[in-house]
Length: 415
Image (cartoon, rainbow, N blue to C red; front, top):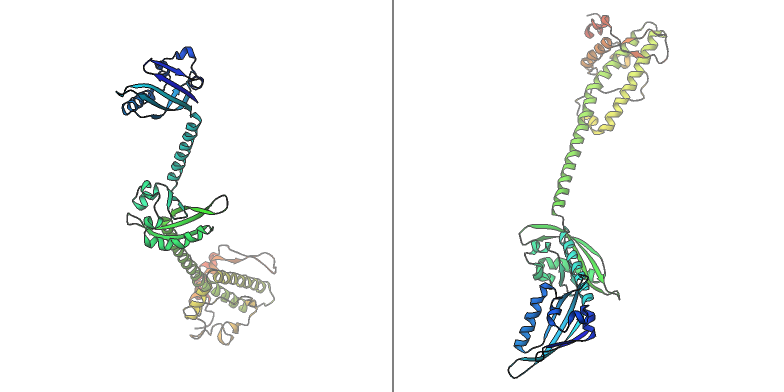
């Protein structure tokens, strides 16, 4: 700290050693001349210093002022100057005495604090949420600017006011139980509806975090509020789409199961029945053709079982629904694990064992039977390879068979 005295009568200015340390001027540089000191005052503060001193003289009052000095290394030093003067009967100053204090460290700390506060405000204002700090009396001590769009009030007008006054009685009645819990030390999360000043109904997700002092006492709470209105709408839309996709998938499954049942089932039944008739008509029960037909019948049985399993996996109720309704009573697939149809007694397939005695009471497979047998003779021919238990039926062109119609082939009986 330094002191100084200015004698207006003698026009002298005297400094203590502390003044030289603060100003970093030598006695030669200062030379007891106020103008030499004024030269190191920051240009933006010179007019302020002179005006303050003049106003103090006019009012015959002391002055208290903070201003900057420019050091020889171009650095900035802040000083706090206080002075008082004595005056004659005409109000002319006689002697002014003052002190100077170097407050550079304090000013730097204040600048850093101000910068930190500015950065904090910048961050919380940039966060896409409503952020506030509420003390134990439920007064807003800090809010970000997003509260302005929610409440229609400026940040300055919100700070220091009760939460109840800002939110309204209805919203406060819902929020107060949660506030009591957070003031008791509990972290709280909940969702609520709130109508803003713009009349828009919002769905809000609220997070309360207690602020504890050194002794563990809850001093207040940090409140983070997210507007999840659009999120909720999106979730509802996705749920609706999900339900529609499930319904669509179910429809596709039903359609596919019905198509397998209605398209492949009758053909496989007709093919199986055709093979059984051919096998029954074979004159050599133990011959090669008989064994080949038995293997072919087994292959059809296996294929029928696979189709039946696929239908059951796709949509089990579909097949049952069609069969219970009686719409496909004569188009059943052979039961799974059934005996080889090539070894069946023909009476299993026709009434009285006679394949020509198909009556109106017989299973209604004749339309599909004709179609299936036609496909069989048009698109397959038994291989001439040596007889094996699992002889493969290979698809080969057969002009002779394709020229015969299924209706002439299935009618070996006399008219």
